[in-house]
Length: 213
Image (cartoon, rainbow, N blue to C red; front, side):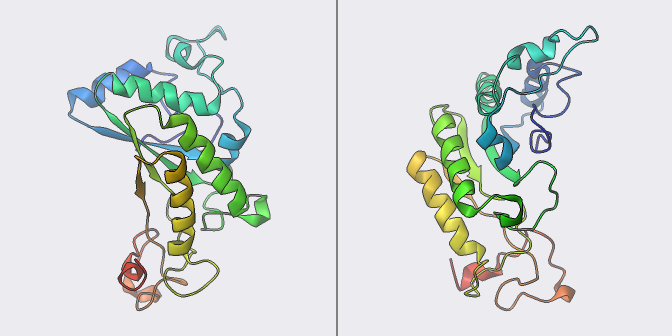
């Protein structure tokens, strides 16, 4: 997991210290074969030029040259190309709906912040279309820890149904990708797994898949 791009309009953490190649070489040297890069729907939809790292003189630093004057979506493509040169795969995952809304509503959308499911579908479709041509981008993690969602309970916040809608939209844009679906929490939870004393943590509750695959 390479955090950073889910919290601001910029690259993952550490690129103000070392360039992308430094990190890719490290991962290759220690036999990592995949990276999970995190994003926010807010910045996918805005797709502004990212805040590339800069040196002490305010000019693009060595680490920032790769991403200088690069837009948010293109940044992920550039990072994926650097990973591809080492044979490393890339998974893209939505970590939050809006950059400063954490943990947020605990769902895959947030109407109160202006991010309806329709906008989330637009974001995923846009990102999948842009990155599908990069061979080593292989999967989409639809939502990080949707802990306030239900699973298989027939509720409006049933994540299994929401994930089907999101996953089908992603696969329409990029049929070759794997779709990752995290679990829910304990409230409202899943049938038979909805109590606070059951030791269920955010994203871990996949019990509902038994009744609603």
